[in-house]
Amino acid sequence: MQVFTLFEGTYSVDATKKFLPFNPAVDQPKDRPASLFINVQPFLVKMEDQLILLDTGLGYSNEKGELILHENIKKAGFNPEDVTMVLMSHLHFDHSGGMIHHLNDQMDLSFPNAVYVIQRGEWENAFTNTSSSYHTEIFEYLQRNAQLVFIEGSGQLSSEISYELTGAHTPFHQTFLLDDGTDKVFFGGDVLPEPEELIRKFIAKYDFDGRKAMELREVFGQKAAVENWNCLFYHGKSKATGFVSLTDGQFRIH
Image 1 (cartoon, rainbow, N blue to C red):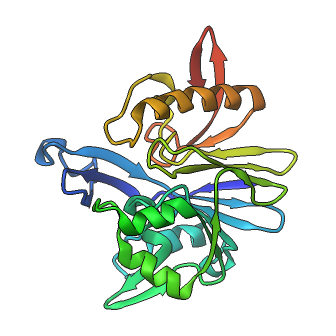
Image 2 (cartoon, rainbow, N blue to C red):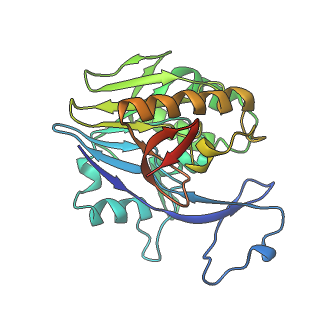
């Protein structure tokens, strides 16, 4: 199993929920008051008979009008048309924006040959939730044009892919574990978005249920250490991927 990090960039996010590109070499944090600074990095996983995308980023384009996500997939040696499955942890814009591609006034599917796998409750919540984190025009387009597979609860998508309904970050957030018999790759979405969140125990205000998210990180960290998971950190700054060890009650990422 091969894992590719598709780094879309670093962004500042303020109360308006707008993601503004932030270049640490040029931009100053003081010029972005009351902002969070996050990395956005979907992941591409090559399995024997599947090319899987884990979340889709913001869907921002480069100066040529090409999706940064598409550009990165090509750099990894693949074409966007090769993607067979898009696994969505949840549908906040920084994870779902790249499901479609805006080109001028036109909207197209970013991955026309892929099946988009979404937790049914998350899909329904996205249409009724008043939060600006959900961009319903994306989902309306998908509903008309994409191959959608809705799953419920926790279970097996295939013999190699399992999913777990966690809630915590959103009411219907889910995680994925890919296991080809040799390697195990865990994608925790925004329940485990950064390696530091394993090391520091805290309740985040941006989570639907911050206490549950904190408790789940502990559970996943312990499983990762015991079962040798390669963990993918969607918002990770110090590391995008890593293995977990547990020594004297302290998690370490390497």
